[in-house]
Image (cartoon, rainbow, N blue to C red; front, side):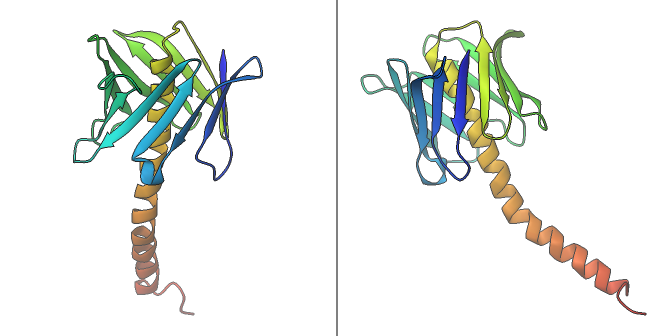
Length: 171
C-alpha cells in the first residue's frame, strides 16, 4: 500500500510506503510538465497542446514510454504503454475522491483520497501506472478548477441580473 500526500497550495506530491519516502511528483506552471520519481524509476510527463488533450511519457534514457489520452468532458483517460498494453483510468465517485485504473474491466489499482492525502492499493508493481494514475487525477482537478474559475463569474453575473430584473429587492 502506497500513501500519497499533497499540502494545500503545494504542487508536490510525496509518496510513502510504511512511512518511508519512496517517491515524489511535481509539476510546472499550468501543469504542462510533471516530473516524477517512484522507487528507482523517473518519468517526465509532457502535455501536448491541442483540442484533444494528451500527455507523452518519457524517462531520462527513453522517449515515448506511454501516452495518456483524455476524452473531452469525461472523467476517464486512456493510458497506452509502449508495449501496447491499454489501461483505463476512471473516476469512481466524484465526491469521495476515488478513482481506479483497470484493464479489460479488471481493476488493477485503486486510488482513495481524502483532503490532499490518500492511499493506492492494487495488484501491480508497475511504477509508471501508479504515477500515471496520480497525474491524471491531479490534471483532472486542475482542469475542473480552471473551468470553475472561468464560468462561475458568468453564472453569478447572470443570477444577479435575474434577481435584479425580477425586482426581488424592491418593497
